[in-house]
Image 1: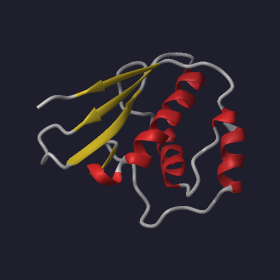
Image 2: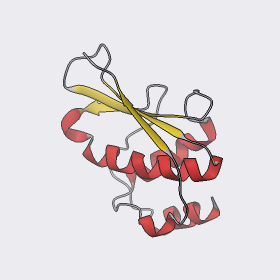
Image 3: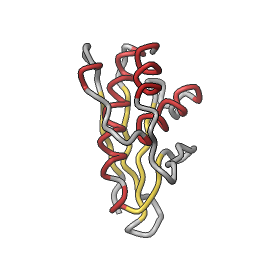
Image 4: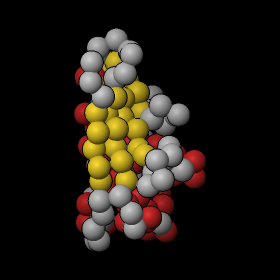
Amino acid sequence: LWWWWWWCQKKKKVLVPKIKYGTAGFRGKAKSLDRVMERVGILAAMRSMYCKKAIGVMITASHNPIEDNGVKIVDPDGDMLAPDWEPIAEDVVNLLTTPSIDFICDTGTIIIGRDTR
């Protein structure tokens, strides 16, 4: 992960207000989550390559109002994203520029799910 921290430090400009990753993942109004969804895909690929296992991405609305949505990352064992990866997730989502996929030089597996109403 050294290359990721180097890249983030180089591109340190972040969005305000900062979007936080919590136990429910990234949450917000559907209209404001385009950037988040795109970058969670990049993050999930990075996590999969790091773990050398499949990573889950859950797009969720659950019991919330229809305009309130979210996305969370599920680790290979079915648990939430490892706590030491939450700051990385926040860095990825909050950078002003989209991370370059040139850094993704290996393959990973992502399983995408969604809840239904």
